[in-house]
Amino acid sequence: MSVEKSLLGKDTQYPTHYQPEILFPIERAPSRETYAQIEQQGCDWWHVFELSWLNMSGIPQVAIGRLCLPANSPYLIESKSLKLYFNSLNFTQFESKDALKTLVEKDLSEAAKASVTLTLLDANHLEVVQPQGQCLDKLEPKQLSSHPNASLLQLSDDRSIIETQYYSNLLRSNCPVTGQPDWGTVFIHYKGQKICEESLLAYIISFREHNGFHEQCVEQMYADLYHSFKPEKLMVYAAYTRRGGLDINPCRVSDPSLIPTQPVRLARQ
Image (cartoon, rainbow, N blue to C red):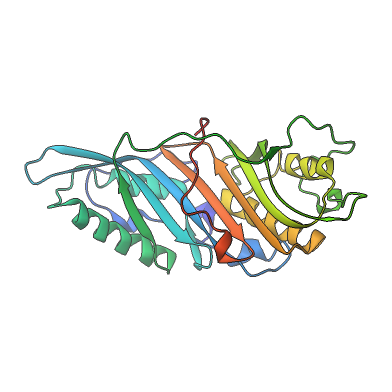
């Protein structure tokens, strides 16, 4: 379905009864045709902060939900429809957390056409950590672009093989429907010929006016880095800040062993 037909950017009433039909899947394939084709491995982690339901006595229950959607699912799920779906559970009674988990996984898996998992976390469970790796943000690139530009990416004069992790807090892109800015920290685990680090930061900054969903931005970064440098190992992971009670953390990897055991939790989120 076309995202223009979704509820994104439109005034809506919040549902007060269970409404799985409000979920709006978006096909991944069309956006992938706009950047270099490559096998998509990894996952999209979501944190759902506005998760509440009723127990059998009618007492509200709360939790943080952690969703995991596989990157090879035919569909992603539009974020506002996901928020409204979880709101539709606010006045629904469940016998147990397991009953809620089973229902949510069934509904989201049907929407994504792949197995989606939900982990229910205590409301005070998430721990904030410091980003790991080499921060690029103090560098001063010589060339900048206002839109994604893979030609900015350059190897260093030193072509030795390195394995390292970079990160930058300067990732910014725009929602392709509403134009609202999305902010995030991007992590790049890389093994290959040494990269010119200024060029890598310039490339990350070039997404600043780009219109794309979180998942699409990460996939384009991954594809551009992979085709530019042919690395032995590559992971691109973005920890986006929360919007509408949700944060999205897409991760794309050259090998499943590079997928973190769980998403990081940063102070900005």
